[in-house]
Length: 257
Image 1: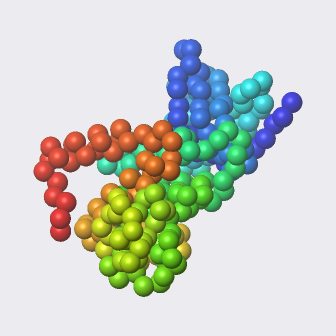
Image 2 (image 1 turned 180 degrees about the vertical axis):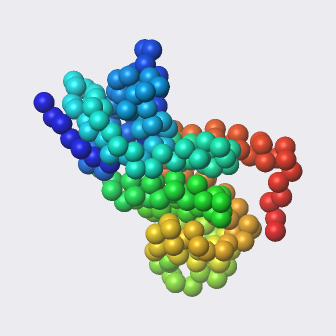
């Protein structure tokens, strides 16, 4: 019998039978695991708050065959406020699905765990530019799972002169102006966006959240990273972002500033 205490974040919560819930937890000590929370749907259950989507808590897990059972939990942060903000909820749903889809069972990634917890926290702050923070998350996420794009030098010749450079997804990052002539599928990228990517990679997301970034750069960065993710991350789920975009279009949200 294996009993383990670990911090975890709920990536998915699925009702099972009448009062039970099957959780997909991203944990510090075990990585991604499935765990059943018996009776968590009862109103007076001690597991109720820690069995909600996005919940961040301490979990006592008991190995039960191929699955764990949550025997005890203490909530650290529920992030319940995210559910009241459609923008925050959409982005939070998107990044938790990213983590769920790109991580393997029982494979730890502590840097990614901290990044996810900090990003969920930032989504609860009114001052947060949620689109920018999501793009910053995407870039750091790619770094932490081993697919960081090359942004400091040309990915083909290692030149540091990036004036007039482009971004090529299949070449893994930036191409200088000379190398750009030898490849197809290059994406336009502003030199300031390149410097922004380097800044994001070199700083934690809490520090990044304090940066004031123009909407033009945020949209360019977001567009490039989502195209990059589609190539390097399998089964990427963009439904939450499409839903958010449809709502913003209905409201006439302006892209340019």
